[in-house]
Image 1: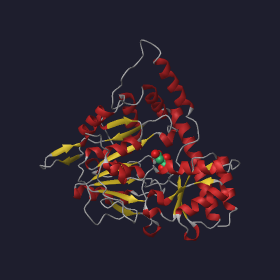
Image 2: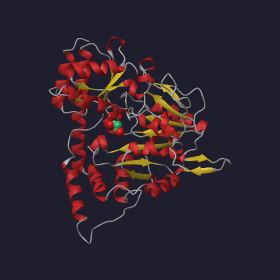
Image 3: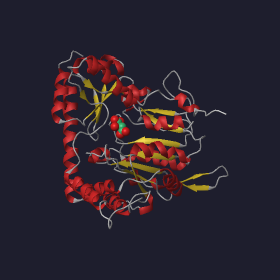
Length: 411
Ligand code: MLT
C-alpha cells in the first residue's frame, strides 16, 4: 500500500494567482532594492480597523479573561447576537426577512465560496463568468469537476461565459445546460455591476432550469448607484435558487481579522439521484458543524460593532476614502488615453491594456517602469487577456504617486 495523492491537484495551476504575483514582485524587489514599489494588486485593505470595532474587540477579549464571562466553543453557525444584527441591518431594510438559522457566520467568503461546492454532485456542470475570481474554478478543479485545462485556458468541463467590453460586461445566459452558476457583483475582477433587471434574468433562468446560483456580494458596500441590487434576494424567487456570500473584509478592514457570512435560505433545494428533494440549509449546517469550529467570540463582537451608529459612520468614511482613490485612478488613466471600467460601484478598476498589449507585458511595464503592481487580467481567465486590474485599497498618497508615475510613462 502507498498513500496516493488526489490526482485532481495535478490539473490545477501550480500557485494561487496572488501567490504567483507576490513571488514575482519579491524577486523584482530583490534585484532592485531601491525601487519603492506600490502594491495595487491583491485587494487588501490599508486602513486600520475602525475605533468602534477595536473597542468591542478589546472588551470581548477582556470577557475571555474572566471565569464568569469566558467562552469556549461557540456555535459553529455563529452567535445569534451577530446573526440577528446582520439580518436587521443588511436585509430587513431591503424588505428581506431571514431566519437566524439561514445565516452562517464564517471566517471568509473565500472559504465559503470555495467550500460550498462540496454539497453538490461531482457530475454537476459549473458555469462561471470569465474573467472570474480564481477560487470558484480552483475549488472545483480540486473536487474533480473541471476536466483538463485546454490550450485556450479553459477547463474542458467548465462553462465560461465571457464578460468583456464587447458585451458591455453583461454575461449572456449559457447556451448549454448548467447546474451551478457562480456570479459575483459588484464583480471581482472587472468592477462592473448588474442592474436588478439584468440579475432577474439569471434568477429566472435558475428557477426554470433547476440550477443554483452562488452569489458573491463581497463588494456590496461599495455600490454608489441606484438600481444596483445589494442582495440577490431583492429579486423575486431568488430564495428558491440562490446562496449569498458576504464578507466584512473589504468593508470594515477585516482581511486580517477574518469574518464573513453566508445565507442559505430554507427553500433552497436540489435533488438526489432518485429525484427526491434535498434541502441545502441543513446540509450546509452539517458540513460546517463537521469541518468548522466557528469564528472566535471577540471577532464576532468586533463585527457586530460595525452596525452601531458609530461603526456605520466609520466604515462609511473608509468606503468613501477608497472610492476617492478609485475615482483618482479612473480620471488619471483616462487622461492618458486608457480605457477603464469599474471603480464606480467597486474598489476595482479594470484597465484595457494599451496598444493591445497582453496582460503580463503591461504588468511588467508597470512594475519595471513605474514600480506599480497590478493584477494581470489573464490571471482571472482567458477573457481577462488584454486587461489589468488595479485596486483602490492603497493609501491616498500612494494612489496619487502611482498615478503620477504611470502618467509619465510613454504607453
Ligand atoms: C482579490 O484581490 O481578488 C481579493 O483580495 C481576493 C480575496 O478577497 O480573496
